[in-house]
Image 1 (tube, rainbow, N blue to C red):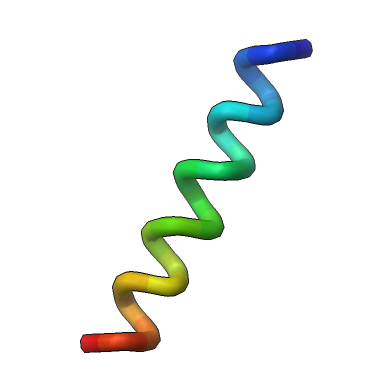
Image 2 (image 1 turned 45 degrees about the vertical axis):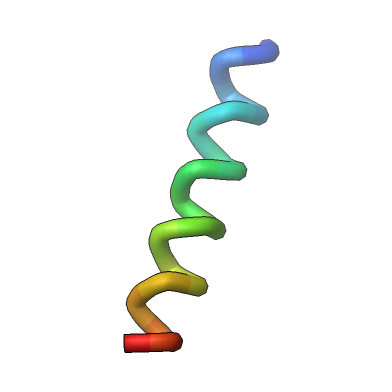
Length: 21
C-alpha cells in the first residue's frame, strides 16, 4: 500500500516537473 502511495507521489512530482519545464 505504501509503495502505491510513493509511486503516486513520484508520478505527481514528475508531472509537475514536466509542466514547469
